[in-house]
Length: 465
Image 1 (cartoon, rainbow, N blue to C red):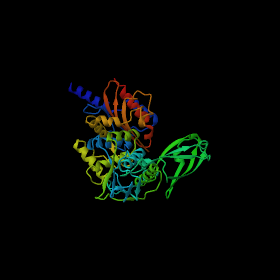
Image 2: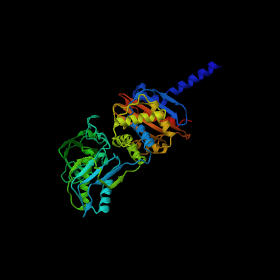
Image 3: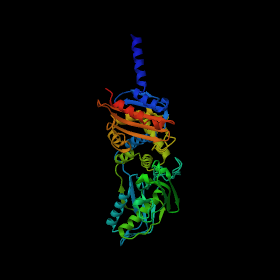
Image 4: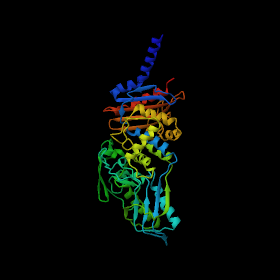
């Protein structure tokens, strides 16, 4: 009898260790080696996983690493955590004129946008009857430790907005959105470019040739170059593309902020005068004029995770080590995350963090440990905020297009995609109202072909009796 029981238990463990048949079939159909995939499936209230496959292998998770950053930030900083952008002066406003310049101290607010900037200027003008700032803008970036950042290191595309660093003071995550207009809609019959935002002094020149090719990978048919204060866009653009949008970044956060601030101030007072910008620490004698407060962290995480915004993730990651009033850095944030995990009895020896965003060739985590983290998060007080921040399969965010399948609308998931990396992880509610943690990661030359296997796993799980 004991032998029979042992055999039965062994058989159960083997079954649990195997991938579901639809997943195996999907991998085989695409020629994906089964050992290039790591999978974990566990009911949120279960002690152990139901399915594990290569679960202890350290994998590159791409943007799925944002789950680690999100949970850590919600738990350590709290869902109501906010960033402040402070405006200071060393002299009073007299007769509508601020002499001595304006000092701005950023705290790394990743949500700051053009509308917020207009709100700040309007508030200061009304409060102080401010009409003119004389003479300079001084930007204090001391919340972050000095760092060197090569925007082209990751993939050789230094002007793509996802490659921008998080900075202490930044608007629109330093991105300028460009809209490409076909010649039939432009007065000079050339490919036109409209920028959002557009400010006085912004100089963009275009030399784009129109083609009749398929639209295809249109972004890589364009080329970009910066010469002094001018940004030049060249290359080719297909008439079959219609109107397209592309977010680019070529200015530092401080330069972007000061340029847009000067222009916005000029728009409000009816004249434009560029304000020279300098980097400097706020003097101890300065007086606080105005404070802008960001939305709460929980709201910021929704924007970050739904769109998989890497600059926002970098800022949230750095906020972890800025909370102790010390200059934040990625090294400090990594230590804080690992120490925090240890307090929750989560010991991830293989974990490698570089920027907390997943836009990295170095970052690593295993499916088993990512599953442990998701179970821990689900059973924590911040579960509602974390889950609400994730794209809903087939409904919104980066997973909006995955419609018309059994799992649509039943899964809150974070996806990740890099060259040779595909991943998805989060929570799934099955047809029996049971909640599951799911992690699927693939590394290797055929990782990009694993989307059908991901979907097969989600659909299989949702429809289990």
